[in-house]
Image 1 (cartoon, rainbow, N blue to C red):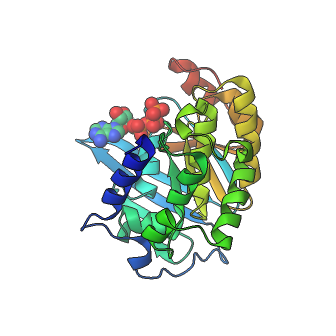
Image 2: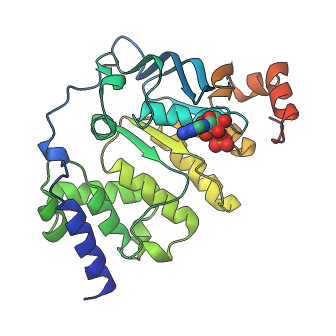
Amino acid sequence: MSVIDSTRFDRLREFARPDRVFDFMAPAQSPVDVRHGPILYLEDVSVSFDGFQAINRLNLTIDDGELRCIIGPNGAGKTTMMDIITGKTRPDHGQVWFGSRHNLLTLDEPQIANLGIGRKFQKPTVFEALDVTENLELAMAGERRVWKTLLARLDHEGQARIDEVLETIGLSGERYRLAGVLSHGQKQWLEIGMLLMQRPRLLLVDEPVAGMTEPEMHRTAALLTRLAGQQSVVVVEHDMGFVRSIARQVTVLHQGSVLAEGTMDDVSSDPRVVEVYLGGDEEAA
Ligand SMILES: Nc1ncnc2c1ncn2[C@@H]1O[C@H](COP(=O)(O)OP(=O)(O)OP(=O)(O)O)[C@@H](O)[C@H]1O
C-alpha cells in the first residue's frame, strides 16, 4: 500500500469510528441571525483557572463581515477567549452568542463548528501525504457522504467549490502537489482553504504569520483582507507590522479584559497600551 493509500486508509478508519457523529447526521441548525446585531457577542465573560482570573468580565462584539485583530501581551487571555468561543473552555460567568439565535454556552465544540465557526491554530495541520486537492476534499462539509467524498469523483458543485477555494488561497497551481512538500506559508493557506470548504461564517485565526517569510506575510495579509466581507475574521497576532497592514479595528486585551479598542493608530497612541507593552517584554505597539 502506498503512503497515500495508507494515509487514506487511516483517515477512513478515523471517519468510520463507531462513536463519530458526522455533520450530515447532526440535526439541522437554524441559520445565524445577524439582522439585529453582531455575529459574535460576548458579555461580561469571566473564567478562572485554579483561582487565577484568565478572562475577567470581557465584553466583545464582532460585526458580520468584519476583520478584527486581537492583540495583547503574553498571558492576556487571547487563546482562552478563542477557547471560550469554540466551546473548548466553559466560562464561569457571562454570555456568548453567535448571531441572535445561538447561545454558544449551550453547545459543544462540534455543534459550534457545525454552526459555521472555523478555527485555525498556529501550526498547520494539513494531511502531508495527501495532495492539495485531496486535503480540500477531506475538508468538504456536510451533507455529502464521507465515503462518497473520499472515494468517488466529486460532483460538479464540489469540484467548482474546490476550484474557487484554490483560487482564493492562491494554490491553483499547486493542486496536485503533496501538502508535505509545500512551504510553511502554503500549508497555512491550505489549512485556511480547508476551513473555507465548510463555508464558515466566522473564522478565528491564531498567529497566522508566525514563521512566514516577508512575501508570504504579504500574501496572507491579502488573503485575510479578501476573506473579510464574505465572512467575519478574527485574527490573534503578535506581529504588529502585520496587524497594522490588515487591521481596521484592533482590540487590545490585557489581564483578560479589553484595555483599548479602535484603529491601530488609536490603540498604539493610547498611553495605557504603551504602558502594558513597554512594561512587559513585548515589542511596543
Ligand atoms: N488550562 C489552564 N490552566 C491554568 N492556567 C491557564 C490555563 N489556560 C490558560 N491559563 C492561564 O491564563 C492566562 C491567559 O492565557 P492565554 O493562553 O489565554 O493568554 P494569551 O494571551 O493567549 O497568551 P500568548 O500570547 O502567550 O499565547 C495565562 O496566565 C495562562 O497561564
